[in-house]
Length: 132
Length: 132
DNA sequence: GCTATTATAGACTCATAAAGTCCTTAATGG
DNA sequence: CCATTAAGGACTTTATGAGTCTATAATAGC
Image 1 (spheres, protein in one colour):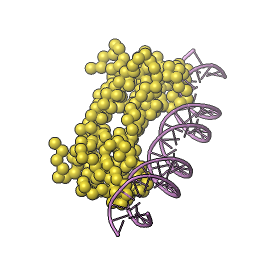
Image 2 (tube, chains in turn orange, blue, purple, yellow; image 1 turned 135 degrees about the vertical axis):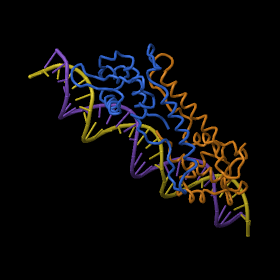
Image 3 (cartoon, chains in turn cyan, purple, orange, green; image 1 turned 180 degrees about the horizontal axis):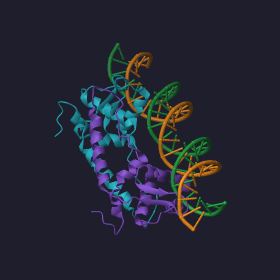
Image 4 (tube, helix red, strand yellow; image 1 turned 180 degrees about the vertical axis):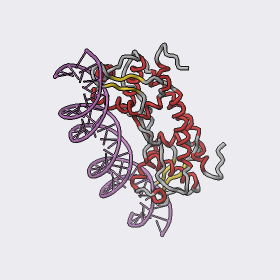
């Protein structure tokens, strides 16, 4: 069980966007160069972030990506979910009665994990940003 | 990101073993029937649990699997690790300086997740077992 | 309005891992 | 010795991650 490398790219891309000037869009070309990944592949990931409402994109000349205004709100969990999806960490494949005790334990663990990841904001990592 | 179904099988198999008489070994045939999975596949998973030191196996007639004496100690994390391995949830693939802030956040989340899963024992789910 | 630039999207490839099957070998109790 | 049971190697099948390649759509600047 592991987070995909795509999540790694997305987290770093978001960090880069946060650290960039908020008014000037950053193109996928520059991002891909910084992350040492192909433009076309990264652009698919960026599109996921756009669809998740985390960033804004503008096509055309001088276009690119910008973080949304509520950037301080963007958590690790937001980004991870945008890339990995929202499927549960564990799902018991049996039906023994109505509820699986094992599943309940793992689900609670997942709930705590997500709570922590939701509390951590990307903006926290950028020097000079105030989050609170 | 998801735990494999193999982990699901293993957790349920352990729960079954805990709930069985500790002196009489349970064969993979019975286990596989209870879990609706093939014997050969399940036996591979059971072997992993044996190698991890969680259960004891005896071949030959009347053989099978038994939990080890320190059964109260067996945690969800033990079982999950035996099946999934101990690889980290997240590993940053870049080398930007010495440490990745992103990785540190996710690693801390993972540490908490594992702490919780280590605190939960399979024996807790078996009525009539005392854990503390 | 034309053109260069940039995001979006579909179709495809390639490698890896999960999930499982089949067959053989080794150990052990009766 | 034999029936029973675990262990292990070799294989298949399917799904997913990680990309590539090519085309299309939108937009700014001239």
